[in-house]
Image 1 (tube, rainbow, N blue to C red):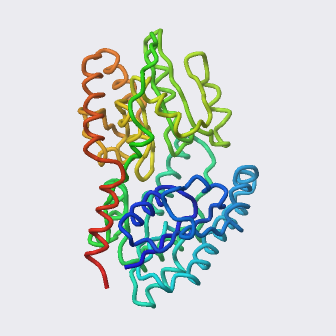
Image 2 (spheres, rainbow, N blue to C red):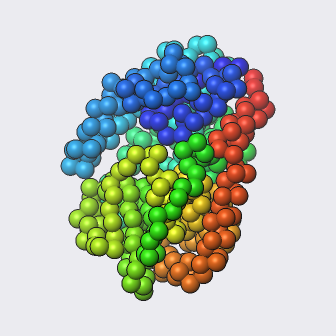
Length: 385
């Protein structure tokens, strides 16, 4: 068995590559990331990492500085980088009999491996692309913000991959349900929640503070539901409170978000991944209020540091923890629900400590990324041609 991976960025796919290499089945991983950004990768042999950043790097730079001004050009560059990576991989996968490609990055290579009698897997990290487009369109409308829809080319390309693939890997039940709503047969879906890096995330000494500390990690964006958290925190009736926000701010809502900043709301921008454990460990609760995503990795990171979580159903939280045991799982788009749960943590310190203990016990059972890799191997072995 020889497996090739394709990922336009890094995401969870390098964790998968490490697992496949450990099981002696990884042939290669193709990435749009430049090798310079992958120089700290030590668990995958360098000769198995093949990068083609020629279009992805310009696409990333354009997205950062001009993407919001010229969204159509940004779409074209993004689609070009995905298509180019797939084409490059298709020319080099003759030795592999299984291809796992992140969605939108595997159409040409998937066709090639299927013609050679192999297996093609589409790995989708978010909800069905049509479902994603619809829910975001409605949310932007509710907030009275202009919405640039996902391009027709992107939607068409992904839907072709869904159809072509032998199966579609999804990370959470909420993602699986979005595919079912779009008519995809359940037998074609492979549910496999992500793991967490226990070498990086573990409880750290808590910095003493009189404040009730709430943490949010991720991009401050409409998709992540940031306004529901900001409104909920504002309504929290307590003098000594602090909200720590870690992540970039979506350019389109930057001005609106910054209006909320105060002595009680501390914006940290982006920090190094291995520093996050200190913030999780010193926080009383983490809130993840997303409108739509696949499976929020920061939830598992927070739990691994003993930080209870309040998360919406649309974060994939139900695949990571149990409601009212390690935290709370709430309906999306409700600042009221977030405020109520924050007040619960304020009024129930004993329960808060109990949830923190439960979180650590749960993560020890999950066992890093090994269980994720084992489930992949079980699935692949059941479908070998």
